[in-house]
Length: 113
Length: 111
Image (tube, rainbow over all chains, first blue to last red; front, side):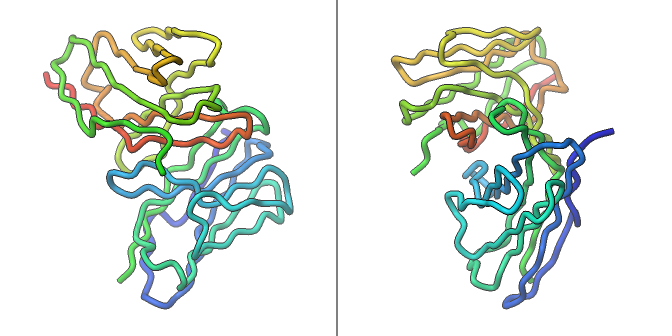
């Protein structure tokens, strides 16, 4: 079955550490996205990529970095520069030009300890 | 600055009755609107959408209405069922295909 896989499901980070969240899809989608969910604020776009080796900042990119070396993979690194990283992170993918075709992963809950 | 707003954080409805969820937007460039449903600890799943050239789209128990002049859309669920208890996100996009989401409305269907 095609789908999008995020790992790990739960992640704990000490202050000052960088952590990387994994996102893999086998849907042959060109575009991939990272969103962050905080209570009462909905989903906010961190980074997105429409094609391999290219990505753009979303609305809240500060303190995050991404790479898109393969079509299937779009890892997100939460750096120590992100002041409030505790949140639920969602990865999504879609065919280019098809907003209705967003498929979301099941998310990663990141907690700073 | 949030361009998509869902002003009701929660909604409680009796099983079998109608659920009405509201969404307002500020960006006049938005031309496609979607509703997503999300259960706890899961990713959102697509529910229904509407293009700006239409004012209504229906899919089974779910109907979305769009009022472009008011920059307002609503989702009607009739009849509401216990499995409809979830968080519902309104989303919108312009021709750059990025989705802007509202804060979500938590729907609780009472037996």
